[in-house]
Amino acid sequence: AAGVIQSPRHLIKEKRETATLKCYPIPRHDTVYWYQQGPGQDPQFLISFYEKMQSDKGSIPDRFSAQQFSDYHSELNMSSLELGDSALYFCASSPRRTYNEQFFGPGTRLTVL
Amino acid sequence: SQQGEEDPQALSIQEGENATMNCSYKTSINNLQWYRQNSGRGLVHLILIRSNEREKHSGRLRVTLDTSKKSSSLLITASRAADTASYFCATDVGDSSYKLIFGSGTRLLVRP
Image 1 (tube, chains in turn cyan, brown):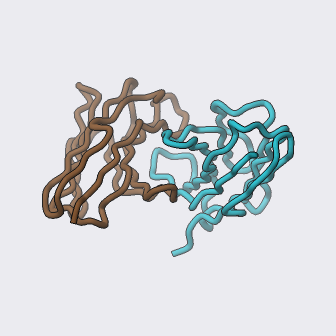
Image 2 (tube, one colour):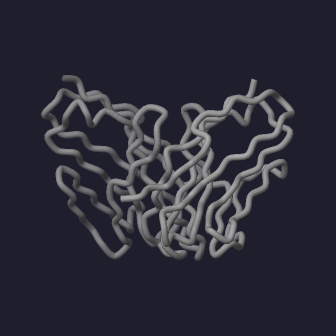
Image 3 (cartoon, chains in turn blue, orange):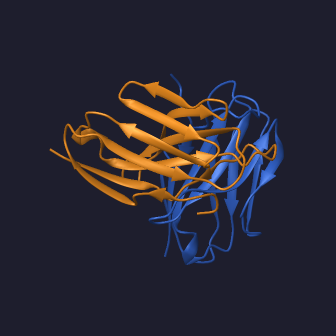
């Protein structure tokens, strides 16, 4: 079965640079969630989209922005990167905005030097 | 963690033994989910239990939910070395938001 695809899988950036992470949800899933997991931490919700509109916002820095496109893929844009942004970034998708399971992608490991 | 805690934080058992992990949460919920994460890898969905359910089984997994105590437990029976991973519980917060709030996780080591 198709799973959530994230790219790139690994990304190394310098401080103050910009990064763009991409997420391709499972086909026919219209809801996308982004989570950040710091080293040794639990995943923290950043932002979600439903039908291409932002549906919920968590502890996402103002330096980050995201959007969902007409084909339902989503991109997380991160600017002015800081050392503390080094983390695993997960995208999850679900069919419709429901209290059902979210299917997670393999994550993008971002390292900021 | 924003929502709750898991205990123990770390658990080491022998292959073949059972492993029990507990999760507590703070708010009313619609459901509770358990995920598994191998070191630095993706989150794999294990099981979802709804707030009106008390117990659920899936293979070697048994999950219980006690909404009066705002707690859940995950039991893995007849553990295998391949079960070595971190286990997280995750809940919604019952406010018509569908985001997941994760517990702090239990690191399980199953010794061969």
